[in-house]
Every structure is written in structure tokens, then in C-alpha cells.
Length: 120
Image (cartoon, rainbow, N blue to C red; front, top):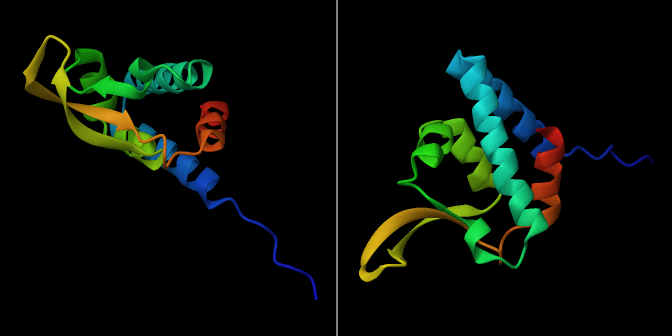
């Protein structure tokens, strides 16, 4: 008896999310900017896997807000890769916290990050 063919559901979900994002945005320039931002974030993580600064995205950062947080599909792609929202102290003040998207390195699989980079 032949085994059923293997289907990579993650690949399909990435592609469908990107397609839905394009339909929802109705702006090719915003779509391209968002994709470039995601690509840069993920590429930096792959190139510098031990550097924590590349695994944290400050949600108050205007570029992150415009190109990731305000676009639910863009944020969903990062959440699929194990980014989680956390409140972290500011470097300048231990008493003040801000929301970040932080890559959970204990749950993430770098193969998935590399795969999404290829799709983008």
C-alpha cells in the first residue's frame, strides 16, 4: 500500500496569508514595504542568531507599527514563527515597560524562518 503524499501545511498557510494580506491592503507599495520589513527582520535573525536585539521588535517603533502591527496578516506570519508579545523594561529605565514582539527561541524552528524568507 502506498503512503499518502506529504503536504507541508505551513507552506500553504504562509502563501495564503500573503495572498490574503495583498487583497486586504489594496496597496502594492504597503505590501512591498511590509514584506521587505519582515524579510529584513527574519534575515537578521538568521544572520545573527545569538544577538538578542534582532529577536525583539519594539511595538512603539513607527516602522514596526506601520509595517507589522497595523497589518494583522504580517503580525500573524511572525506569530506563526513563535514571536510573542511581551512587556519588557526599557534599557534606560527598569521601572518602565513597553510591549515588544519577541521571538521565543525555545519554540521556534529556524528552518521555518528560512523557509518563509525563501517565500518572501
